[in-house]
Each structure stands twice: as structure tokens, then as C-alpha cells.
Image 1 (cartoon, one colour):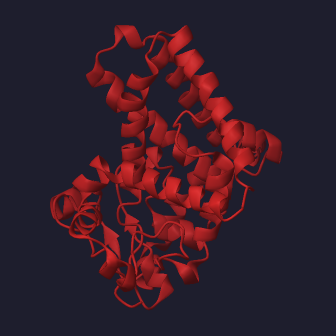
Image 2 (cartoon, helix red, strand yellow):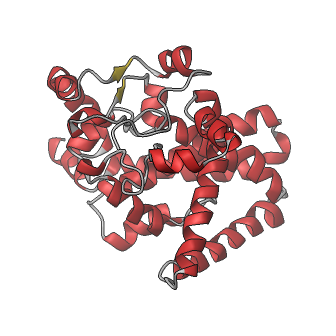
Length: 300
């Protein structure tokens, strides 16, 4: 029995179960969309797409019990529409250089801006960035700001003569077209409704996890938070909400994180300066309409 369980974990059995449940549920949601009201499609679709982002994140760090091509195939399908997986993998790998965490222009996932850039911004842009530091703003306009930054960076790259990402965008476009054929042509779910009712809420829910994952601090170990949430969000984010454990041991499989965190909680929270929240409800009570931090990086 132990040998069978070891084999199951050796080949990332729990992750394959997540992938199976995720894709089968997504197909069922799209296939039966005409029978489902919008108030079912939105939360279920958002959960599934945010779960898919978590699965992609897992494939970047762990999920090593299978060949690289199979791992890629398991997470490549862009049901979230927004970002080619190879570019996400490249960007997120850069983010994990802990010494650069939160530094604008260096950390690819920083929500801070430099004081000099802030000084050049108009009142409307400043208001948008400040609203984006509230939970309400992150959920409502966070995806739009992420898309705008993505488009700006990728178009600037092309204008500078760097065409290295175009092959990924071309393949991404073909895959999205095939998805829309299935979603709209086969299942009769209008593609624009999928964007509004599933893809956008899915990206919003995914951004909730990163709402306050990192903060500016002199000690790089104190820049990474832990959100001790319930199993519903734990499974959704594949326990990446216990972010301090993930950054310390990024290759640890998601299903090992809860036990590791429980066993080492005191040491982990001591190292990160007690940067911890008791779930997303606490975050909502404190920061739903109040910025979690200023957009301006405090030390640069």
C-alpha cells in the first residue's frame, strides 16, 4: 500500500487529479452553458479559471514526475485567454529572484512604481493605481490594468526590434481561436459572453491571491506574506496563499505545503516579520476600500 502511494506521489498523482477535475468541469460548464443561469456560470467559471492559473503556476515550479513536454501539454491550453503560458513561465521565474522582490521594473510582478514615475503621472492614473491597491479595485479593474501593462510591454518590445515573443503570441492566437470555435461554434456559448462571464472574473479571482503577497521591506525575507485561509481557497490557489513557504521552497509540490507550513509555522512567521493574515475575510474587512499600501515604492 505504501509503495503504491509513493508511486502515486512520485508521478504527481494529486496534481493529475486536479487537472482531470479542472478540465472535465470546464468542459461540462461550457457544454451545458445554455441550461445554466449567469449566477452559476460566473462563480463556477471564475473558480475553474483561477484554478487553472494555479495549475500553470504549479507546472513552473513542481509537477516534475512527468516529462517536460507532458507537463507543458497539461497546462498549455489557454482557457483563461489572457497570457501565453511560456511567457508567464519566463516572467514568473524572474519574479522568484527574492532579492529583487517588489522592486519596480525588476520584479515582474511588483505592484509598486518609482517615485519619479509617480511624479509624472496625472491625477486619473494615480487614482487608478491607488484604487488597484484596494481589494475592490483589484477585483474590478485589476485585470484591465494587467492587460494594459502587458500590451504596453509587448508592443514596446516589438518597437525595439525584439521579436522573440511573437512565436508564442502566434501559437496563443491559434489556440484561442480553436477554443472559441469549441466554445461558440460547438457549444453555442457566445465568445464575448465567455470573456465577460468567465475569463474576466477568473483573472480577477486569480489576482485576489496576489493582492498582498509581497510588501516593500529592507529584509527580503520580510517581503512575502502568508494568508491562512480555508480549504476552499487553499485548493483554489494550490496552497500558494501560504506564500512564505512557497518562496522558501518553490519546488515543493502543492500537496506537501500545508503539512510543511504547520510544522514550521513559528519559524516561517518569525522570518517574515509576522506578515500574516487570517484569511481573505480579514483582508476584505481591512482593505476592501482602503489601499493595502501606497503604489509608490517607499525606499527607492
